[in-house]
Image (tube, rainbow, N blue to C red):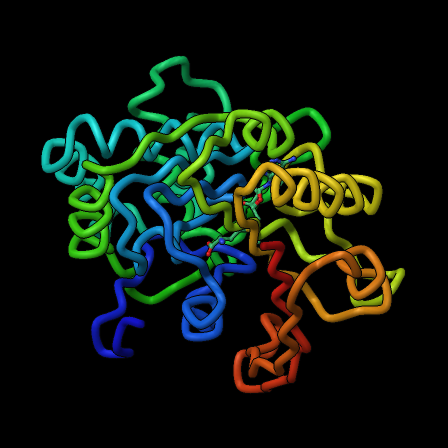
Length: 274
Ligand SMILES: C[S@@+](CC[C@H](N)C(=O)[O-])C[C@H]1O[C@@H](n2cnc3c(N)ncnc32)[C@H](O)[C@@H]1O
């Protein structure tokens, strides 16, 4: 297991990122040659594990395009992003012009650098699109947004051993092979029926998809490929993952996003199919 002071932070702010529960994940994650992550997000687990190779997918096309540009161009891409992190770029009017540009440009490399800009200048680091796929996060009003230069370099180094694909989880899981280990971190099931859990990408992720993921985990295990899933610990998930060989439940301290000083406890679980 990696020591805490060795951990590598993702360069993107990402809802549901697993940076805080890495130790729990390390304690459950089987060894193998390649780690497959169908829900890559900010890559917290990818960055903090030691597999020979990685296959990372996400249904967010903008996220995967960004990773591919950083992987191909490294320093040149980081320099391009840095130009968007000056005081001149940190005001409301500039932000909304760049957001319009992001939503209309066909320059995919420019779009990828704007994704980094909006992740750090937008409200709460949210990544939210409307039903038409238009990115609609408001200006975040941060005094001095941090440019994650060091974190982008670390990601670039690690990406030398990774393949990034824009794919739905079910299609990706159909491609796994012997020697793979699969870590699945889907959008959380809601803690209550009123919770909104469609904020990750235009498509959302509903309970039938959560159920489908649990069934795919069971089928994948039957082919001799272990699968670890993380989620909230709820009646629904305990039932959906009842075929798992091991379930670990634990509490995590989380900040409530609308009031940065308040903490709350979220109950999480890890379900291992092996
Ligand atoms: C909880 S986040 C993953 C966080 C990641 N483990 C981290 O540490 O940052 C869930 C991710 O699933 C992606 N996602 C949502 N629906 C998906 C689908 N149908 N197939 C693949 N990825 C999906 C979202 O875009 C989001 O990045």
